[in-house]
Amino acid sequence: MIPRVLTVAGSDSGGGAGVQADLKTMLALGVHGMSVITAVTAQNSVGVQGAWELPVEAVRAQYRSVVDDIGVQAVKTGMLASAELVEAIADLISGTDAPAVVDPVGVSKHGDPLLAASALDSVRERLLPAATVATPNLDEVAQLTGVRVESEDDLRRAAEAVLGFGPRWALIKGGHLSGEAVDLLTDGAEEHWLRAPRHDNRHTHGTGCTLASAIASGLATGLAVPEAVARAKEYVTGAIAAGFALGAGIGPVDHGWRLRAPR
Ligand code: PXL
Image (tube, rainbow, N blue to C red):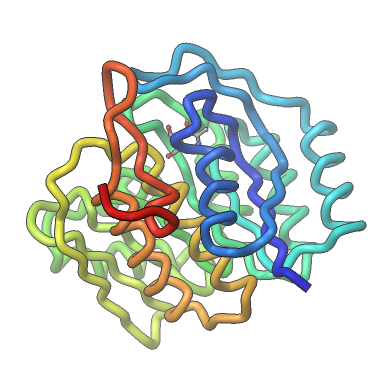
């Protein structure tokens, strides 16, 4: 049967990030994508114009509908908006026998808040311990652990601090550093340094969502974490290289880059 992957995340009306990015990634990588929507954003290439979270009951009901009938081989979480939703999702994924990729989304590409400040403790104490892989960027590392990464040498300290909250693996995304795009994946014993050329392209909306969903897709097909992450990094690097202009601001990565001839 086709591997089934569930995203628990917010809707991006512009189609570049959030649930829309997740489902496109899953299609491109050959798995069946499903969604539990936590919040709806009114959003485009210039920013987030509004955000509305769903009631916890509506989120829990979507999750149970999918998991209890269809089943999942991996779960990915993204924008969770509030402490109440973070805690509900942490409980749900803890009770599901499938790997969980937790993207601890804090703010959008434009700096608009997608998580309440009051939810940070719940992310640290409830959500991260339930993660198979946590995928913070450097801003999220600083927000969650207080560790400020200014060079590649700081990535190891960042990973240790994130692992301190209990995920099996931490993937620290160093993409905001200058030079090569370098990420560190570690479980505290093994270290995998992932390097990719930096593409000179401002159209990078949806990068984090896409990477986390690609990892979940790999895990659902039975890949081990290091292999799933390495392949996901290749996919997102190609998607960034092919990112395109849309609207007046930052355009999306191209989820379909492998499906068409180079432009
Ligand atoms: O990339 C983080 C993210 C997650 N979820 C939603 C988003 C964004 C960024 O814009 O819009 C819904």
